[in-house]
Image (cartoon, rainbow over all chains, first blue to last red; front, side, top):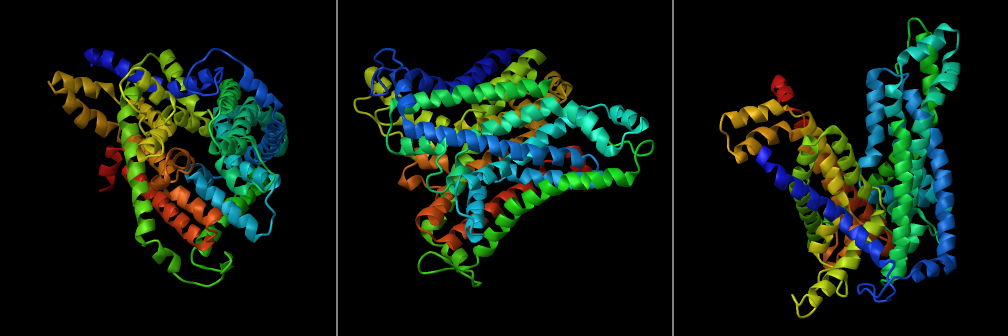
Length: 255
Length: 295
């Protein structure tokens, strides 16, 4: 298929253009001086400045950071324990649990949001930032588990044998051999979970109580109440921060 | 890293520690994921109180209500739009995945990363980007007007087309990755053999490449179809009142109409669709050789 190389390459490039064009356009117009956001009238940073002056937005950003931090720590604790614990099970059990853990990742997010909402209301847990944190920790546990398990599989099994021969108990071996070796993966998983939490809209939308506004919820209400170049500026910040965090996470996972 | 059992610890000590480690996570997922899902199923059979509460009774009313043309239309439309999205992703993603799978290893990594990066940017932002482009005073209309291609702005946003564009944009990476994995594993000598036997380009594609990469195609289709079917944000922002999808209907019943049992019933239908699709694909996604063994 040598002669087909040219058009394949062109089609692939068109795909990339499709994937990157809209984001690039969005970021480009965040520097637009005009309020009418689709006509270019010169460079300006004014929309970033108005963002910085928007108190409600800053409060939402603080909420988002708090939710992401706490939910990531929770997800890390539970996810790492799950990943390490799975190693000690028989193959069949392991597969069963692993497959069950994949379900939250494949079902539509709306269903997760709705079922959590229903659960909290029936259990009479008032909706607040706490319920948002619980929701985020829920979808991030499988993410952490998968990343850490991928790393566990690459570790040398002889290391644990050595620890056993030297008289370490299983628990000691986990603490002093396995966990330190997993550190880059754990960090990478944490960054990934943090980013997903920062970005999440749907689960947050269903589980947030009044006043518990995160940044994506704020962006959503801004979009709903009309277009403005400020949203472009905010979007640009979102894109840059997610890409930075994910880039760092991937780098850590590869080590 | 498997636990070394004979030379190392007694089998039981590793087992006990493992279950202690698994306990909290399993409990957590059970309580916050599986219990709420079961609750949704239970409530879908309950009745609705006068003020929007739940009346604990057993009936199929909610499911029968879904047969109403209004709901049935939204359900059918969602399936059509998700299917359209999947097909478009397949058509667009296949050449890209094929190109990546044939590139040099170093290049492959760069291209895969390039495909993944948009996926890691906020979904809300990516959807907003299309609003920015498609709306009446948006970029596309402004450009077309300036170029003199149209006399008056055309209504692009708030339509089924806009929703499908948004969905394709959002889920294309989900299609490319499994396709790439399948194409990368494909035995290329078979393709070469087909060329040597003077197969046409179409024959090579339909009779060699496609059957060989079938598991990847099915996985990709599933990964695109399921989130498209349950999409909420894309139809909410890019679709008009007539482009409602199942996700919006669920949200509407839960948060606006406050008819929770009906909302739960719609969620159950969505869940059934997802589970059905998954079990069907798990059966058909096996490579051809494995299926012949079974029959």
